Every structure is written in structure tokens, then in C-alpha cells.
Length: 355
Image (cartoon, rainbow, N blue to C red):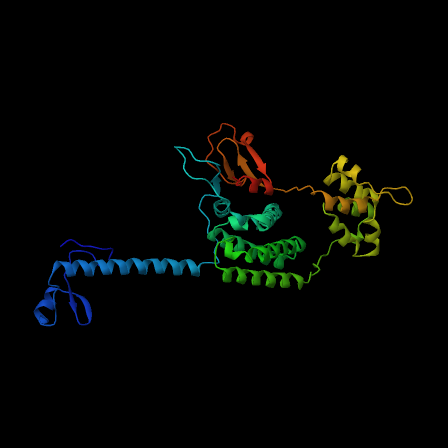
């Protein structure tokens, strides 16, 4: 009878059924234990037994794979290729389409958060996904999202930098989940509600850890910011692109507070983020007839989106329609690959997968 089933026992051996179970029946056993063995008498019984063993083997293999996946749940799953082909339709030669969750799995975001040039870009992308794209993520993409978010929090707790953006990200994610979990009966989110409740508890725990963080003053033998001339201090302040950072800096010492009130400083900040037309619509004049640039800045921030600028972003090749990081070699057939590549903003990344 031919060997049936995916069994670990190879064909060509003689196996017999005993009271203790199946045993390998060799010549030595035949001479010594002839009376203890009982053979299968019909081919139907042999076929049913082999079929049962095959099903048992498949179930055990699936269980081992599932246990291995659960044990490695903290390890984000990514493909070897750090790029993804993006297309919005299917033809006879090309079937299916690319989803946001698949792109999130394929692109190497774990390495991106370790790079200071890409950190703010990834944080902004996580925030946009938390606002509106959570229901579109698959189960694996959800695990990757939460694992990457945990690594971001641990990085901030370690180097004590970028605390406020991560707080805003966690708050946005928690508010979105509070609204989506209420609609679990409508199949809004993929996964069990208990799993999402556990993730929300982790978010609250991360928020508490960030609230309790204490910034340690680094030990430096060189000059500090307050010891520099006022002109250099203003030059450094002009490099800040967020008005909230200026306000926080002004609360350190009274001298810095006076410098952060410089009108020219806030005027350049307004002109950097907003157009002249937007500024003219929101003009604010003081009693002395001067423009209140500081108040105008915060008023403009409430009315219009601020300008986003990143040191490094994802790249999209218009020739081969591949999304990739700049230092990743993607299979492009163009003669001049640099002319075909264009930077993709975080919102542009989300728009690529809106069908």
C-alpha cells in the first residue's frame, strides 16, 4: 500500500500497532515478540488510520506556527525588500492592488525611527494614520503600528527629546480609539475588542510615563545658551519652526523671555508658515498701531495648516511606481533614476492608498 499523509515517518518501514501504540517492526522484534503485535487486517482500516495521522500532523504544525507567531508578537513583521510597488487598479497582466497596511508592513519604519532625519516624518505619519486610517489596517499592520509606537515612546524616554509631539500623537490615537471602539459592533476595527482595550491601557501607561519624565541637564564644559551674546541667541531662535518652542524657551530665564518677544522673530515665523494672503486676512493691530505678530501667529495656526518640512522623506519613483526610502536600492529601469524620484509628504503617503 502506498504511503499516505504528511507524516514524519518515512515510507519503507514496517510499523505495527500494539497496546502501547505504534512501533517500528524490525526483524529482531519479529523473532522476539511475535505474539504481542497485532496487524491491521484491512486496507480500509490502514487508510483511515493514515488519514487520521495526516490530519493530526497538520493541526499540530498549524498550532506550532501560531504559537511561534504569538511568542514573537513584539517583533514587527517586515519583508526583506524595503520598497513597495504602488498601483491603483488591476489589469489582465496585473491583479489586485496595494493597501495601506501592506505598505506599512513592507517599508522599514523600525530603522527610520532610529534616524533623527526621519523621526519627525514617521511620527507625523503615525499621527495621520491614527486620525482616520486605523480601520484600513490589517491585523499584522496593527501589530506593527503598536510595536513601532512603543519603540518611539521608549526612544523618547531614553534621549528625552521630542516629548511634546509624542504626547500629542498618543492623545490623538487614544481619542480616535475611544470613538472607534464604540462602533465595534459595526466591524469598524479589525480584531477583538479586548485586544484594543488592552492597547488603550498601554497608551494611558505611556502617557503617564511621559508626564513623569524629568529632563536631566547634560554635563557640559562648554558655553551654554545663556552665556552667548544676544545676537547669537536670536540667530539660534530663528532656527525654531514652532512658536510653542519659543514660548517654552522664554520661560527659562527672564533674559530669554525678553528675546523671545522680539517682533521680527515672530514676523519671520509667520512668513515662513503662511502666505501673504493668509496673513492679510488675519491682521491684528495693537493700541500703538503696531502689528501683533505673536498673536497673529497663534491665530493663523488655528485657521490654517502650518508648513511641514522634513530632513528626509519617502521617495516615489514616477517611472516604476515604487515607494522607497532614499538609501534603498529599488529595481528601476530608468536611465536617470534621480529625475524620476520625488519626495512624498506624510499626507501624500496616505493619499497614495485612497482608491
